[in-house]
Image (tube, rainbow, N blue to C red; front, side, top):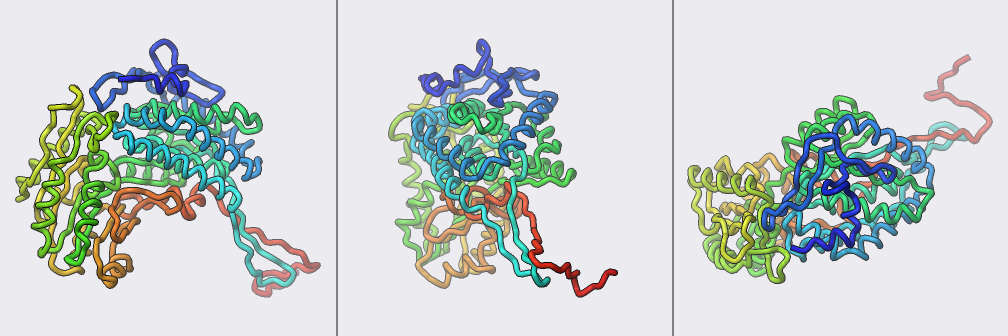
Length: 514
């Protein structure tokens, strides 16, 4: 496998010997002081990189640099910060193919999906540039004569971003591009499974910062380390906001620690996403959405479709057509043209998939197709699987758990209100969808009595975030919102100002204080 993308991006310069730097602030580039670890490609299991974990002790020096950077960045006009983000977007566009290749190498995504992820980075840059001129507050009527009130939004402080392997660039970009225009330096702690993606993003940003000497280089920083580093970040008062993407268990730990010091956490956690297929649905349209949502990225999206709630009158036909489609899915090397399903990220993911399928059978489920490891026509050393379809009861305990693999549970319903109840009965609340041609069903699904998820789509699948809309979910998904709408407010603090432009000093509620 070619690694020329690392050379083109300048990532190979970020190391001593064979070991990559784990602490990078623009001013500082050092190895980690902790234990050694290697990152391997899901494609064939080959070792891609070697690191030493950064330690909590090293966080102290980085925190000092970030605080200094914040003192400068917060005073730079927001449109100038927007210019920084605009240039980062242009630099990412320049190296789009190379960045996508790094994603494919580390996360196992097929090339079109990897290119799409880099495009999300570019798109959120465009969004954030516009937002840099719209950090608006309010003008508020005062009860006091000769007074006016107003609301302002101010930079918050250094922000820490903890990311997962499956979207190693997009999630960082969602947080970082908005954080920068809001005046906040950003520290990234990436997944240990995708450290080279972090270095590639860092280098792109530093290329731009080199030509903008008024902006501190530590505004974009990276530390690569293990769980102990993540715990130290969550506990550090340097970071008024910690944005974390990953499992619900990880999110609970981060939220508890951050709340203990009265900080803010922005959480994007598990998704056990469902689609309702009505008896009125356009089945041709629905089937395309189902296959992509359930099998794309080998089922390793937080928005992957995991539960298909299908009307009893159409379920047999839908399952038959899905099974036929699944058997023809091209499974293989994600770098090769024509591949639609790449590998699972590692052996542990494969083992968890097999365990979930076995549990589903024990709980009365029937495996319609898929689930087995694929070894023919794929690189040796990778864990490639055939996406699985399982018919099972909606109240089977395994259905209420998120397995980060391509398993689609097919459930049935007779009444639309019942379908919504099934949709909402799991602890996760990220993405949902309905396919229907009935206006009343669509409107009910989106109403207060409908889906309890952060995303509720009509006649489109569960997968895919569009820049401009706030991304996130409820319940065990964490409640965070990133990327669009008013998500920028996460990265700022609000002040209310009262201005006395008159000659008197009237007190509240008519109080006279002699």
